[in-house]
Every structure is written in C-alpha cells, then in structure tokens.
Length: 292
Image (cartoon, rainbow, N blue to C red; front, side):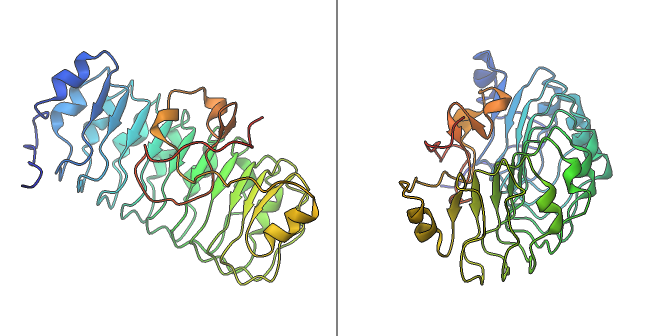
C-alpha cells in the first residue's frame, strides 16, 4: 500500500499531535506532497519544518509567514525554483535544498542574514549564486554534485565560511579565490577534474582537505595539521608519524541541530565533514579527532 497523499490545504492528521509536544516542529517527510499544504503557513510559531522526499514541486509565497522558522528541510524533492517569500524568513539558520532541480537562487536570497548552514548539493547550478556572497555569516556551504566550473573572485567576502563542499563539480583548475579563504576549516574538491594544486599553506585554518578522484599524482603541499583524503594522502600522513583518523561524514545529522552555532562545523562535539553525501539528515554521526 502506498503512502497516502494529503489534500493541498489540510494538515496531516497527526500534525496536531506533533505540535502539541511543545517543540514547534512539524515532520512531513516521506509523504506525497506536490505542494505544501496552505495550513502549514498559518503555523506562525513553527520553528522546525521537515518536508524531505515528498515529491514537492512548488512552495507558496505564503511561506514567509513562518517568521519564527529556524530549520527548513526541503531536500530530495522536485523543486525547480524558490519563491521570494522563502527569502523573508528572518530567523532561518539552516536550510536543506539538496537533491532538487534548482538552476539558480532568487536575487533576494541575500536577505537570509541569519543563515548559518546551506546544503544545496545535487542540483543543476552552473554558476555560483551571487546572492550567497552577501551571506557573510554563513558557516557551512554544501554545493557538491552541481555543475560549477569556476568560483567568483569575490568569494573571500564570505568571511564566516568554515566548511565548503565542492565535490562532484567540473573544476579543471584550482579556483584562485580559494587561496584567499584563510578561515576555512574544511574544503572538499573530491571528484573534479583537477590535475594539480598550488601550495595550500595560505589556508592557515585548514583542517580537512579532500581531493580524491581527481587526475593528480600526489597530495598538495599543506600544513602538517591538515588531514588529507586522496591519492598519496595515507603515505604523506604516515611520514608525519601520526595515526590516520577516520574522516568525518559530509552531511549534518539532525541530532546536532540543537547545538550552538559555533559547533556547527568544528566544535566540542566534533566535525560534520567528509564522507558519503547520501542518506537522510538523521543518518550520520560526528567523528572524533577534529574538535577544538
């Protein structure tokens, strides 16, 4: 028996029970929803909304009425565009858009000044969305499995960025702008078309660098404190006479969403970094060895 499809304007039958818990959280993931029920947008106190893997094709402009929303999960749907109303969520800190059909982001996306974590992997982005350059407080940007070939020279404006995932794109040369991202902790360029690297010592805060599955012959020059993932990395770290830690996962687990913002990437609980991008938001655990 298939999953029942909700009517366009009604909340699911268990929504009242979910909201009664006091957590102001609504879980709609896994249901059949071509569009978001209009009644959801009337939940003005809602703080967490999960609508993953529902077949969702559109969002209403009225989503802007969710003024208290902190977390919005829309990954693994069929969204081709985002409404301007989504850009008017003043408290939104985490937005999951992976596995959709997005070609671009709205110009007003830069209004999401509270955003700390954006996951937009597995879409059809050919160019780096310029509205992101104005999100100076963004800490975690996941853009793997898109179609990027270059990065804008203005990228270092994103001074809050600590984790940047660019695996599975179409880079043939190491983007020069990355050398001026001195505050990055995590950089993932796995599965591109890179034939070599510059000296990465200018990335003084770098802790994890993944370059696996590129046509390179060996690891780049990095500080001894950097954990490497790629061709020749094991040998290079063996030369340091250090134990080889387990690489942390690429996707953040929902279990960590209530932690402090400074722990989003590299905090007391460890890093949410490299590994398989597949699976649900709940699926992955933090890995030890990269905490401050």
